[in-house]
Image 1: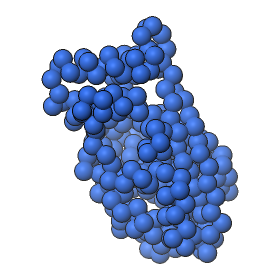
Image 2 (image 1 turned 60 degrees about the vertical axis):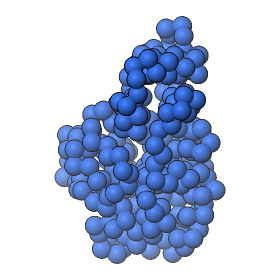
Image 3 (image 1 turned 180 degrees about the vertical axis):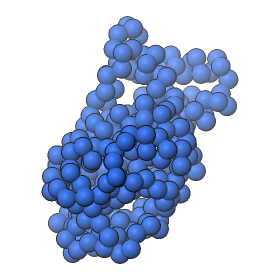
Image 4 (image 1 turned 30 degrees about the horizontal axis):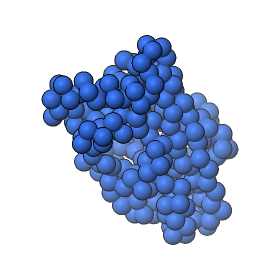
Length: 261
């Protein structure tokens, strides 16, 4: 699935940088979704398998197919040992590797804004979902400061070093998600926001975790060391993290669900 020019190729690094956040949002999301047991799922853009693991642990699924463009991410996902009901395959969100009406629940966790054509991606999720089934997603509210590492992005923009944007940053917006689900012809659509926090032991912990993000890593590799030092100082100020104590970072995701008629 070609969802971003920057590939997430480091499964372990992604797990530390974003997998923990994904599980925090995912727990609230699944409580809200309230799926019944024994359903067949597809996890579109499953990455390191963090959300697939949550489904396996909390939802007693009949099966989960996790797809992602990165074989190295999938290799990490397979180390989770989730059993025979869960399989991970390289796949394309624009052309899901399933027959029509193959699953009961299609989900995309922190993925819609990486789709080059979100409307097409949602149409594919609908296509593979049985009538009466659920198509659902959650994504960071990128346009309104909801990304968990927004203080770093803000400081990068201040220094003229804006990180590259994902293909469809608007797709994390609540209004845009509602439009996508409505125009896909889904019914019984519901939406909500999901605020989350994460505690880092200190600013250095936050910094070393945040710069594992491919979009940030690529930008910093081309940045002079003195500018990186200036950036780091600005981020610390943005976070009010100059005391050496714990850093509490915040994120906010928008979630949506709809039913196939």
